[in-house]
Image (tube, rainbow, N blue to C red; front, side):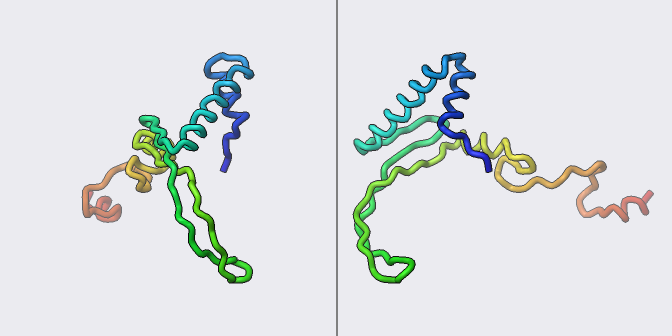
Length: 127
């Protein structure tokens, strides 16, 4: 699956806003730095229609080394968490071919719709 890199994002912003790449890079870096600073302070970030970023705190616990199975103490940590917004989720799902807005696969359309309970063979014999 293709992934957009930071440099590709900068190029996209540059093209979309008709800005020099240096200016677009400053803008992208400023946004990312501001987000990191807010999360570092424990603040949440909410971008309506896109989603929200929060920091989740995890207590220390005893884990296991997967190779040896020996116990390992895992230090407490804070990790960023992203929750997708409704509008972004809907826009992503709308762009997927062969899938309806509710995420369920769509059936291929038929050339002549049949009434409920009718089969193609019963349709031709009824004529």
